[in-house]
Length: 346
Image (cartoon, rainbow, N blue to C red; front, side, top):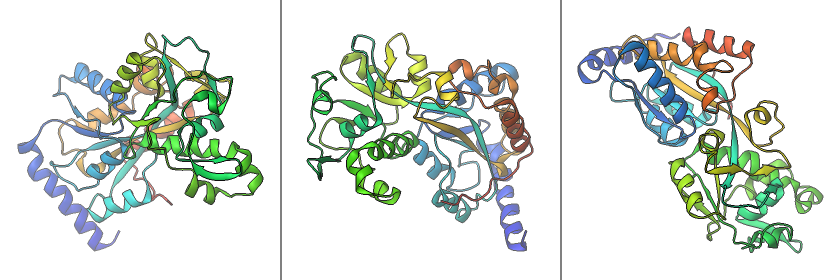
């Protein structure tokens, strides 16, 4: 490490040390609404085990959490951020510019991006990714032309689907769930269309032309609070919601999952990859705050514990699809030792 980098890191740690004890004794965590319930569960267990002050856990969305996390080192900045996708290179670079140079990345498990509907809706929903794309994309092919999406009812896309208005509540652009949904569902659905398959369009074309959600009413950005989507689905039995599997899992008394390509979202189908819309979940730890912010090290140990992460652990009981035993042990060793993450390539 160069002298300049060493000096920067040393000054950053001094800044934390000088202010942490006087300013706050609570761990502060921001980030993904999908990771939020898992982190909240760890926080509750941590408080029960230690009697320490309860960590402050805020649901800011993945993008918003990264921005706050990367603003700097010191007691005024959060210690951990949750993310429903991997950190982007631009976010890593922002962290580096602001002196957040030592970060541990923890892939805590997997989650499915669920489409769900009220249990009051008695239709047996089973959508292809192509149908999802045609319902929710800003532009679609019609009669050999790439045009603004004209579809208003599900039956216009497939006559076997209900003759009801398309209405889907989903996450905003700041959400990692939105990023993952666009990549895993919208891009994949676009690639299923004959117009794209037969047109010889490459992945770059798909990314440039198939990433925008429609803004004319059928798709509604519902903010970062997934509980509000659940409430809206209860109020309108014809509306669909888009969120992480954990929220469907926690609300199975009110909601049911929509099959994708004939496969229902479940812990088993997400784990074996048969459910086509799944993604990894992360937390990122500011290592300069370890040993300085009170109880942070102990909180990380709880998050990395077998009780939390192993199959049958309390996070899997809340819907997290756990890592294999080998991957979990590798994760625990890396995070507990404070191994710094590698710079993302994109």
